[in-house]
Length: 135
Image 1 (cartoon, one colour):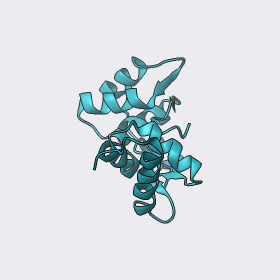
Image 2 (tube, helix red, strand yellow):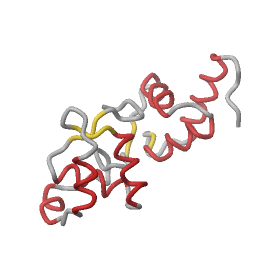
Image 3 (cartoon, rainbow, N blue to C red):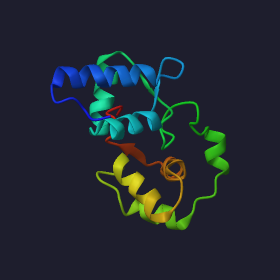
Image 4 (cartoon, helix red, strand yellow):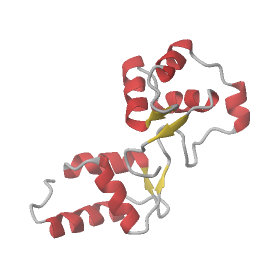
């Protein structure tokens, strides 16, 4: 589906797509990204529209929030991959790792985004600059 040229129509189309994609009243992060791709817009546009609609984003793919967030106990028992730790440390901006950069680390190392996010958490490194605008 192509985004309508008229911005008002584009906003309506995005709102319709978001509403149709809700899970338990929230928009899961992976679905927000699929919606952005489908509508050929940046993820931040979907996040902003969801926010304007009073809809919360759920299930961050990096594990920063949502049902799949690692508990302190799980992180305490987690073994840190030296390769992921090195990549995370090498990607810091003001002592944090930007969301988009964390995704890149996951892709480069062929590991899950969640693994990168959990590694950052275990190393007491925060993820910043959410691509959907959540933080």
